[in-house]
Amino acid sequence: MLWKSEAAICAATIQGAYIAESQTCGHMGRLLTPTQKDRLRVCGEPMPRANAEALACGYNTAYQALEGWMGSPSHAHIILSADYTQFGAAFFEGRWVLVLLK
Image 1 (cartoon, rainbow, N blue to C red):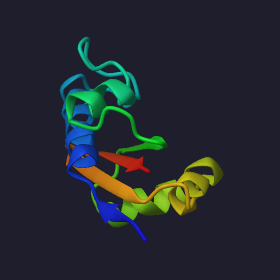
Image 2 (cartoon, rainbow, N blue to C red):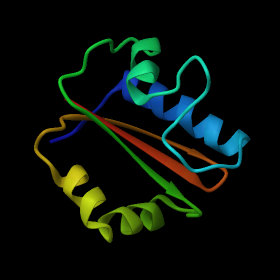
Image 3 (cartoon, helix red, strand yellow):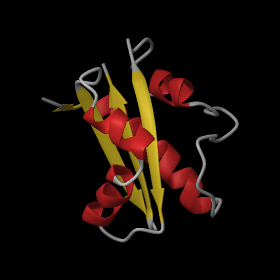
């Protein structure tokens, strides 16, 4: 079972805002938070045991984004993995960010 994580929501929001503003769809972020681990640290989660980030760009609904992720074997594996117990998500201008933590 996954539980909502404020740190994961924060990290997803930082990356979602950045990729919307920069009109990109990638895992690298702003200068001060270039990696997911940097974003998690800034959001109060300094050392998660496991973490993953999934991006879905060009989807207008959560259902469409999830369909896209589940249609990708590597994304489906991450989402269905028992390694993650917490999640956070954000949406900005057709760009979805899902952050998973343990």
